Structure formats: structure tokens, C-alpha cells
Length: 339
Image 1 (cartoon, one colour):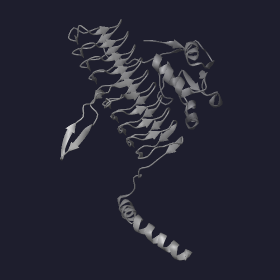
Image 2: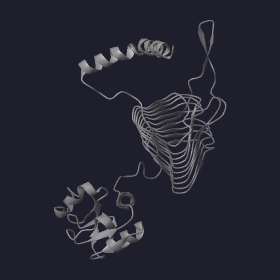
Image 3: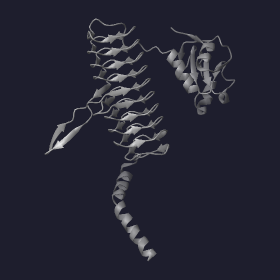
Image 4: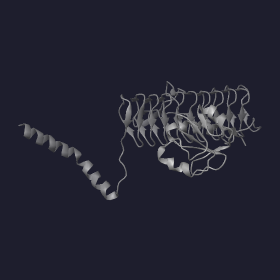
């Protein structure tokens, strides 16, 4: 089991130790569940009372939350971010694969880097380029001409189509599909004519793709996911979408074709972004948001109807249908007053 001293952890996160810096830490935990050998964190002052009862060996704290109730602490500017960094050090998640399994099918023309692991029954197609230290789990498919950057990890059952470009230090969870056809069709005499999707998906560095998320390839140009983007489970990114650096997209969100999302945006779960519109940098969209026109000013935006009692919801639904008639009546009254 990996252990680190408080001194080592403080240096790793850029904090200062109060108390015995030789204390050994082997795991992370919440204040409520921590035991000896664990380090906990306080990121919200509302939970400060739990410092009196925690059994953690040490706690990550901001300076204003320091307390004599705990014997040892690491004082840092951002306890939650420090917790994340320490959790990475102490992570016990097994690797998706170890070595190259004998059942993996790797094309002769594929170029495989050093220290690459490929799990059982995975297929690596012609002219794939896999950089050093990449790990690919069981039952994956990597399509022709795809490139995967160093240290990227791909969990079981991921399908990556042809000519996809993936950067370094990315993470793909099970069931993700990258490079499937976008929804491109032309109508002729009531029949659908398929438009071949000839673009790629280009994914930057440090991108995290959730389970069962789909990223469609571009129709002619590429679908682009920039550095540092995190995408939750069961999201749909349509063809030719562009997602700017360090944007976070929560579960079940849909980005329609050719929309452009700026940098550092936060998009809440089950949101829908219309196609061919642009959202500027530093926009936060609350859950169930429906964005049907461009957003040009940073800030927080919300839509959707919160849950209410059924009887109340039915009354309000009926009133909503009367809004147009009410608007016309008000305009008529305004005109009479003016006259």
C-alpha cells in the first residue's frame, strides 16, 4: 500500500503543514468517514463542526478554517483541488490492461510505442499510431489511421473510428464512441439521401470522456474538442461541434451540429444546445438549460421548468397557453389608454 508523509503531500499541493509532518497517509476520506491513516478535507465552512469529531490523521484546510480541534493539517489555498491531487497519488484503481494480451489483434502496419498495454480481444486496425505509455482495455476497437497520444487510457468496450486524432493524457470510459457518423441527410421526394461524413474528430490533451458518450465525426470539417475539456456520461456531441478549452459538460447533455462552445464554460446536466450557434467564454448554463440562440456575454443562464405539484403544474400549463391571448389584450388596453 502506498503511503506518503504529510511533508511530502504538502510539497505536492503547495501547502504548509501544521503539526507533525512525519505522519503517514495512505488514503483519502470525508471528515465523517475518515479513520487513522486517512486525510480528509474541508472545502465548505458549513461542515467545520465535523472537525471536532473526525478521526482523520490530518485535514486539508484553508487558513481561515484552521482549528485546534485537529492535531495536524495541511493549510492550502484550495483544499478541494489539493484533495483531488492527493487522491490521484493514492488512487488504487487498476489499470485497464497489463501488457499486450495474446488475443489482441494488431495490424502489421500499426505503430505501437513503448510500454503500451492492450487488453484481450481488442482490435488495432491498419496504420494506427499509438504513442508511449498508452493503455487500452479489453474489447476495444481502434479504427484505421487513428492516432492516440502518450499516456492516454482507454477503458473496456470503447470504439474509436477511423482517422481520429487523440492527444496526450486523455481518459475514455467504457462504452464511449468517437467518430460515428453525424446525422447528415438530404431529403429528395420524401426520401432520405445519406451524406457521407468525411471529417474527423480531433481531441486535445487532458480530455476526459464519460461512459456511453458519443462524439460524431464532422461532415466535411472536423469535430473539435480542445485541451482540458471534461465530458460526463451519456452525452451527445454532434458533427462539427467545437468545444473550447477547459469546458465541463455534465451528463445527458446534447450539443447539436456546428455549435461552438467557448472556453471555461460549465454546462449543466440534460441541457440542449441548438446547432449553428455560438456560446462565448465563461458561460454557465444551469441543468436542463435549452439554448436556442447565441450567448455573447459571460454569466449564468437558466431555463427549464422546476418540478411542482401536479395540480399546480396543470394550472400553470393552462395559463401558459393563454399567454398570447393575454399579451394581445394588454396591448389593446395600452392602446386605449394612449388614445
